Length: 186
Figure 1 (cartoon, rainbow, N blue to C red):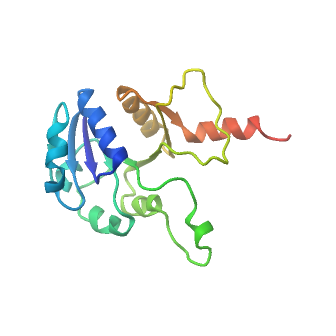
Figure 2: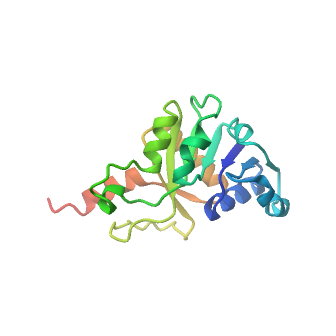
C-alpha cells in the first residue's frame, strides 16, 4: 500500500520507518523543507521517497502531523481527498476549552475535518490520559497504538495497517465504552 506522510515528528517517523520496512511504499513531505529529511530518509529501509505535499496526498492513506497554526495553509491546496483515510497525529487527548474556557478554539482535528470534509479522519495517539482506566488485555506488550474516529470502515483499515507495522491497534471508542460500563456504579 502507498502511505503518504505530511509533517514529521517522532511518531510519524516511527510509523514511516515501520511502514517501509513492512513493504509499504512511503512518501514523505516535510512541512518546512524536505532538505531536512534527506539523511533520515536515506537511513530507512524499503521504499521511501521525499516528495511534494501534493504527491504525498495522492496516497490512499495519509498520516498528518502539521503545526496547528499551519493546518489551513498546508491543507488548502491538496487534491480531492474524498474517501481517503487521514491518520491525524497532532495533539494528545484533551479539550482546548478546559485550558482556555473564555476562547472558542477548535482542536486540530476539528480544523482538519472542516477543511477536508470528504476524507475519513482517524485520530491516532499512543498516550492515554492517566485518569482514564485502560482495561489491560493479556496480549498487550507495550506496542499499543490507540485510534478513534467516526467511520468504522476507515478504523478497520487503520487497524489492519497498524497490524502490518507490529502495533496492536486499539479502538479508543470501543475501549471507552467497555471501560464506561465496567466502571459504571449502576
